[in-house]
Amino acid sequence: MQKLLIPLQGAQMLFVAFGALVLMPLITGLDTGVALFTAGAGTLLFQLITKRQVPIFLASSFAFIAPILYGVQTWGIPATMGGLIAAGCMYLILASLVKIRGTAFIHRLLPPVVVGPVIIIIGLGLAPTAVNMALGKTGDGSAILVDYHTAIVISLASLFTTIAVAIWAKGLLKLMPILAGIIVGYGLSLAYGIIDFDKVTQAPWLAIPNFVAPEFHWQAIMFMIPVAIAPAVEHIGDILAISNVTGKDYFKKPGLHRTLAGDGVATIMAAAVGGPPNTTYSEVTGAVSLTRNFNPTIMTWTAITAITLAFVGKLGALMQTIPVPVMGGIMCLLFGSIAAVGLNSLIRNQVDLGEPRNLCIVGVTLVFGIGGMAFGIGSFSLQGISLCGIVAITLNLILPPTPAHLKATATAEPIE
Image (cartoon, rainbow, N blue to C red; front, side, top):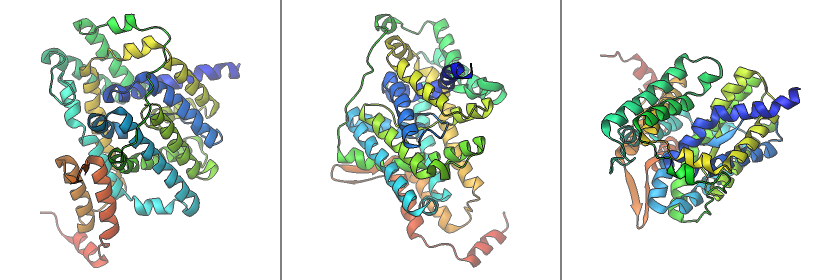
């Protein structure tokens, strides 16, 4: 009987992850069917590489939203996918270094003072897009898609529903705040009559997802490679979280090098067919903690369910009918939460911003990211998250540690 329940438990895990999984491609303009397919296929590849020992599910990574939006606008989807393949290769390089040298070097290369401000930029850099969409406009604010008064009601309802579920809901519902926000916002959109179902009625029940072959342009590749910093660090945190939930040390078995390689291969595969990069999903980790079912086979069935749904044409068409105010309202919380994670990284690791060295790294990184600093040579331009990542790492490597007597002085200074 227990074996018969495993496929249903797998489908339940996908339901937990579904809202976040499809939100990312909806924001970036990628195909939701491809995202479902690559989430499932990526999870199966991860299980193959890690010998199916870790009960986690891989799906669309929010850390790549801003780079994908910029990449698609600047070079198009195929070139952006080529850059994402290069970012996935960075995971493999990190996995190899972990295998050879252990995990200590990652903490030296990517300490909290580097990772924190980069994650903050990932969130805050998207704030204008979220607000524009919440107001019924396109992401860049150039066109009005929904009347302001209608849009603000729908977006705020989506936002407050997401907040309410995240804070007050119980059980599995607490793990699905994004999905709850989408459902309420969509219901209001139906009441206002702003949803057009023509695409749904015209779409076939069975359809092949809109796969896209990658192209390789060095500008897009150089832009995307540094972006891998934040999700790689996020991956380490997720593996630590699932280790705490199950009581097993996945850093040792199957090993962090294997989990990083699994994440990298899943991302490369996803980008190779036009899908968003994959990352481990904390929502699913929360569901594993709640259900206390640590069998990795459940995630195999979650992946199979995702792949199956990818070929349901009407589902993909239905996802495209979600109005921008619904996504905009949820994004106001989502992107702010990403920035808060970066801030919490600084606080939790007690990064002393009274030290000139730390203040310089964090301050310069934040201003470069929020202010839109760009360095260009010819046709190549480095800006945004990629520039911030490189600047933060470089400053961390070249700036000397603060002398002990200066640390003591900074600590002793009274606050005026």
